[in-house]
Image 1 (cartoon, rainbow, N blue to C red):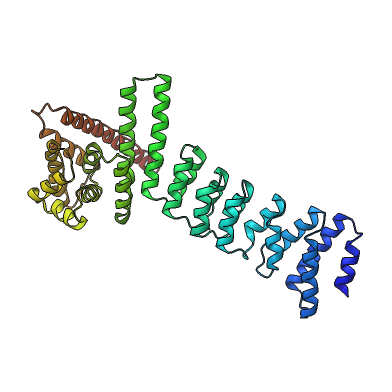
Image 2: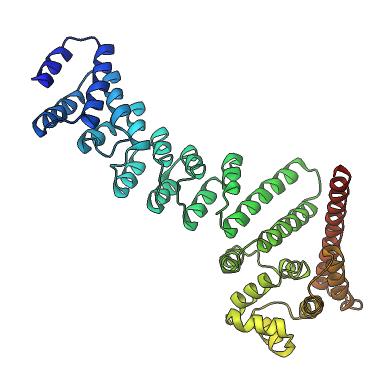
Length: 382
């Protein structure tokens, strides 16, 4: 009787009053202790309100029922197809949607509704994958900013592929603690390419010089990324670098001279096809004949082998003494050991590697000076 009287009153009441009454009916449906007949009547009334001509009434439905797992499912599903501000409320909050529905909806809608799905309290791998594949820039940003979103490696990769040139998306990707190393490196490469193109367009320096500077910067960043990458993640980073033709001799030698031998081992295993365990054994035991064979199978330039052998010998000696005590001096020892092997060689590629190592040593010296300055300032402040 009460529900019937409510519906009769709704036919003539002004829109503002109808919206207030809808809020009250929704709360009663969710929280009141009523018999089954009354609850069924309430549900029927809520269903009829889906046809109310006032958006405020339908918005009241979405606002009150949107977060509840006890709301009538057909009401929520219908509200998800209403105008954007109404659909956004239920798509961003309702626990009644299953992943398959959200995936289909994300593919069918655009703009703010995709973002609403990306902002849900919990976003599964499947839904995140859908957003990363078809979501617009704002939806992908919302996904990356959502701590409740579980984003798989392939989804991070797709977002980077689609929006790596967008600075806001790049920042959001780099802010994620779970960003895979290969995606991190992809972003660095994209930034480097953008910067290189700008330098060439503006004619600030000759093109060859610009490319060399950008390549050095990318290699330096890649080595830093590899140094912070968990061992089990190195294979993915190495594969990405191999496929994108960035796994160069210079990059590997830079990594070894920086003391990142695990990265070199992962790369040599990938390039040679030998098991990582065997490569690690050869490197760490200093078994030169076996290491030379694996190096040759990897397709790396023969003339550069002595450079790697010299750097690894220095690394093993430092490791045997408990590890490097001073990062800068350790790097200089590595670089000096390598350059000493090539004093009388004039091969072009070797000269290129030597020049790269000298630049690397200079970079390390500047970094060491900065660290010293920071420590001095901190000690003074204390």
